[in-house]
Image 1: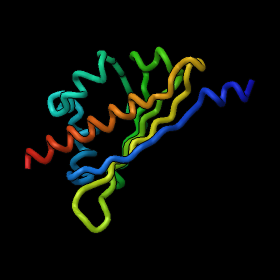
Image 2: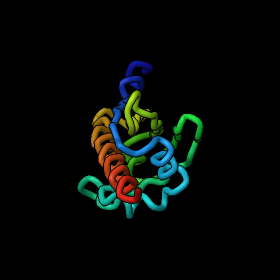
Image 3: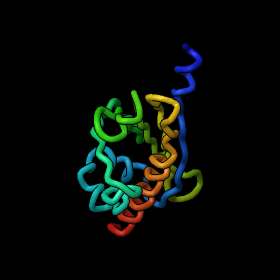
Length: 138
């Protein structure tokens, strides 16, 4: 039984390079989340079909520009028992800009559920669009 359960649990992560400062993007995801739909067309139009997700902030670390969300309700929870999204934005070394690190921890409801690569790609697109929006405001 333990082996079966462990195959349902997973972690996927990726990084995205952006031009904005870590503080600006972190602030967008924590303090100005209501601005995201207007700043990111992908956020509104999703990746093919509308998705709804209600999450709770589990932790915020302004010093390290990180935030962790736990998904509570919505379409994602039709396929996953648990889903945690962590985001950290760090300065690039020796040059302007930042690196966004996305980290998803999840447990699928069964083997038929795909790993959330499409959600991870969606996070990458939203990061790029928010970066373009923030750069256009400067």
